[in-house]
Length: 208
Image 1 (cartoon, rainbow, N blue to C red):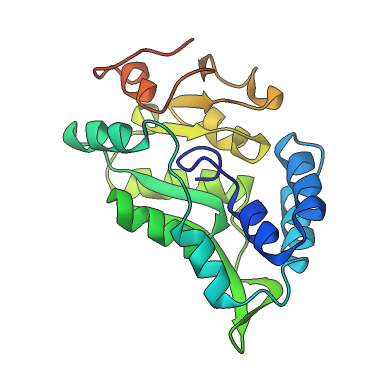
Image 2: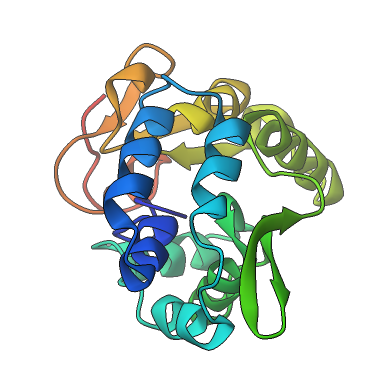
């Protein structure tokens, strides 16, 4: 979701609303480049959001901008019969909105703990990180009766690397350097509509 279907990192935008953007953005950058364990980075960043009101967090999520070509990509894939599942290391309050707005089949993400109308600085339930993304990919492929070689995964950062390698076709969208060697399919310029060409549908083909 973050920096892929949407043009920003949700946690950075929540941090901006809470006045801790600088601290959170530094940890986000380290994690996306692969220099910090994802789960550790998630807990460190979420802790900085303690005290942010649930209402303000929802307002931030409702204003998240889609990446260029997101709607075109989703529409094209759905018309071709694809199932589209959002799996994110971000947060359910954003992922569920994106799922609803784009008409996706499923959405999986991390849940921010809320008490008394404010974020506690913790997440609840199992963390959706790199290994869990692979598990969800495999589980949903089996659910829909899709052979793994026919699956497609799209991502931009280090926590997407195992998922891109496991999928039949992994596509790195405006990728961090750590993704350059894990898949031959890259989109370096332009929008998500190029995904359609990379999976054999109409549209631009992107770089390979």
